[in-house]
Amino acid sequence: MHPISATSQNYILSLLDAGHSAKHIAASTGYGIATVSRLRSKHRPHLSKSSGGRPPKLSTANIRFAQHLISSGKADTAIDVTKALCNVTNQPLHAQTVRRHLKVAGMKAVVKKKRPFLSKKHRKARMDFALAHQHWTVEDWKKVVWSDETKINRLGSDGRKWVWKKAGEGLSDRLVGGTLKFGGGSLMVWGCMLWDGVGYACKIDGKMDGDLYIKILEEDLQESISYYGKSTGDVIFQQDNDPKHTCKKAQNWLQDNDFKVFLWPAQSPDLNPIEHLWSHLKRKLAGYEVVPSGILELWERVEEEWNKIDADVCQNLIEGMPRRVASVLKVNCGYTKY
Image 1: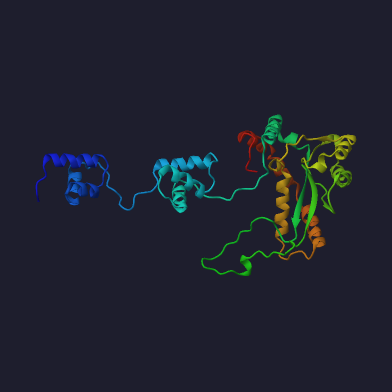
Image 2: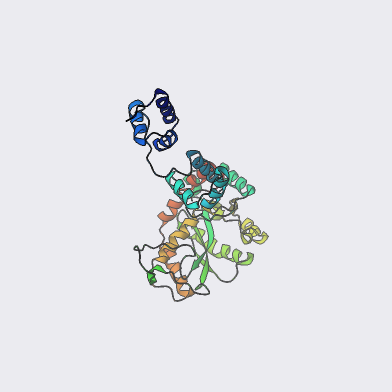
């Protein structure tokens, strides 16, 4: 073994302090890797050894930059982030590399939820509504009659359907959601709910317009209120801002019949607890093993399941209104989790 001069030893130690690997130092000085390793063990035992393998393409700063792009809304997908990082690092990158680093950093890809678009005007209206009702208690919310329409399909939901499968399992009937060319049919339903329970639900035949809506108010809404022994002076009526709800005919009818009507913020189904009542109803309908033979049988099932809904289901939803209002203030009038 040839002795190492003090000058060479100090030079090797300076390279170690600078973070160079034993392999790199050996190649640049002409000494063996074992020699460099011995010097490190003897004079620099505190230095961490390289874990080996290919060095990562993205630095910690690169990952922080990628997270900033995503959180600020400047990038949505791994491909978007990859393009931005390529411009920063001046080296080719694969989107899969970026995905892997983002997962290690604790992020995961999810499907964007569909929510009504919120303009600045919508956000201001939501904030005004939340500020006006932030101190309302459950006792205040008990006075509200909640109303809405929904579409119910004969062949189930329009959304995604999930199913478990074994690894390598081939396509089978249970893994396929059958479709028909014209959708299998559906019906539109209007319904309302109070603290005391569900009101009357009705099937909407044909296109809903102002005249048909007034007929629903005259028959189904007023009968729902009367059924629970209340009058128009005891309740506050909630409806969304659909044009048929806010047309002059409907407004005049509500005013002539002494209804107090909520000033409801547009594009805000997340604030309406009856949306979750529809979900409850559709889950019950999905529990049937046999698909309804037609729209008439579907409506019969809707009526049966709607009338089975207990008052405590409505009450649990209405009790959540203070939390819904608080969540609007918390997210600065943006999208809530509801």
